[in-house]
Length: 135
Image (tube, rainbow, N blue to C red; front, top):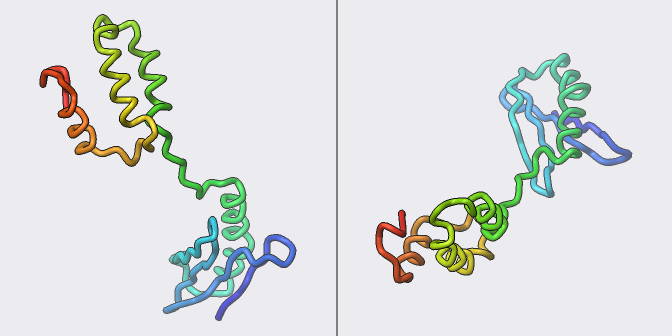
């Protein structure tokens, strides 16, 4: 048995349905369909609980963006902060040219897209001593 709950005028927020004597929610977040088990038995009291408390709380979370994954920032965003934090280091002025080469290579990449192999390949292309590479 399906039961739809409306939150806004005419818009269905979520459907409650039962499967194997358990209640499930069917809803959409960012255009993607989500089906979740509530681990509640299929009883009239639990359906009322879902309709009056759980679904409105879920709707509020969706509206506030609690289900949105944070976007990965570009390497260059963190590079600026790194330079500011390390400009007082003794070796900063000797290494700043290396830092800038690394930023030139990875600046436009999302941080989540950069992997260890990419960094190793780039460092091996630079004319540096192994002790300078630190990877």
